[in-house]
Image (cartoon, rainbow over all chains, first blue to last red; front, side, top):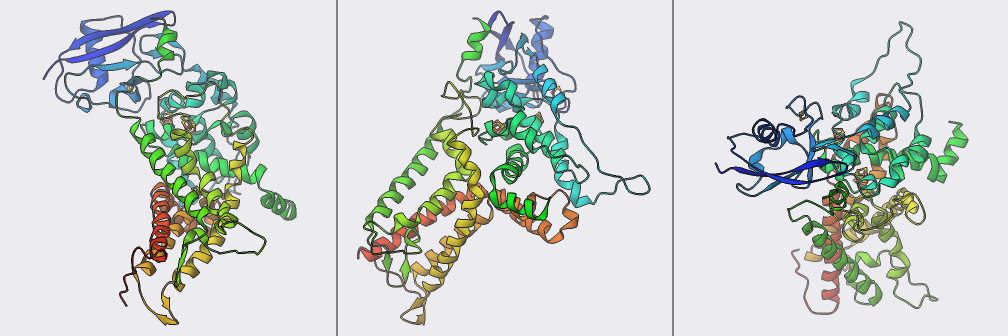
Length: 247
Length: 241
Ligand code: SF4
Ligand code: SF4
Ligand code: FES
Ligand code: FES
């Protein structure tokens, strides 16, 4: 096997450059393995965040050849042998060092999401839900919070000034899970429209394209939420019906 | 280099990300050019019992000096223009916002669909109602395409017209607004089993909404081309029965 030629971003918020490393590789290696090998043999101070190496903790997000990916789930044989592979940190979040970014923006958004508000429980103090009522939400619960979707979303990636007004796809997934929950009694339509900036999303589907959990973020979370906001704010017939039925 | 320069790089992608937007510009652009031309003609849109979908229903009020297609095409055009799939396609390919994933948005400022005019995309479900009404006329036309001088028959045109309206129906009923109205708006499916089944059916097709969008776009244009060529006497209809 020829050596892998890795062009890894080295530097912090003040500056840096892509540095080239040649690394012998073995069958079955993933990008994170190669990064670890560089760290072990050539650059002990290379900063990289990782945890599970199994695509489940969502820590090792980066941009490999310009595509947002989990490094631990990106096999080296995806790339033509002998050609340089670029590994860069996520672009949307402030750079801490090398491949590590500060994703605190997302934790800030998480705090603003209106929490689950259950209705009254049954007489025996429990909730009973039918399988078909919770099936739809299962997909949303697969999210591993890798924030690759937040990173790729052009609303904030290319227009950081929108950050205070936009929750981002990961949180639309969370909001869809709450809104569609059979036991939840809250309505988040106003939050979605005014605080989460749902209308900033132009449904161009990059979040869906990069999600390592293959959540249909745009089709199953964002568009259904947009439709719910339409019913609440932009549909005169739905408005009239609500007035008549009194709901 | 300063980190800001890394942030300013338009893209680090090395693959042919520009191919998809290019194909969409050619495909959608070609369709818009052809449809506009065909709609402005006001001629060669019917042949015996065949009627071009661009002219159905044919309204010909005496005070209207132009092509009858202009009176009706706002309906299907509005439906496609506000469709969630086509929005993705043209925002990416024509407006470059963004041209592809992790490739920089071509515009300095961005407000998405928050303000005028793009906030109007929210009326999509009304266009869905309009498109459904159009489908009724198109199914009528397709059935009529099997009646030659009062007798049942099958021509290549009849088959083209029925395939076209079937594809248009798949496109309409796989629509995201339709999915919402059928049952997506509910939180508790178990209380509405019928709507749940309907939602499941629409959901299955909704996964292929893009495919239906393209197939029906091509079929509607080809149906018009076929009837136009017949009407101009350039080709003859093949009759099977
Ligand atoms: S579909 Fe919407 S939320 Fe997802 S990346 Fe595109 S603009 Fe962002
Ligand atoms: S929705 Fe997908 S891409 Fe976004 S944070 Fe969750 S797992 Fe990652
Ligand atoms: S290390 Fe956990 S997802 Fe990659
Ligand atoms: S027709 Fe495409 S989403 Fe409604």
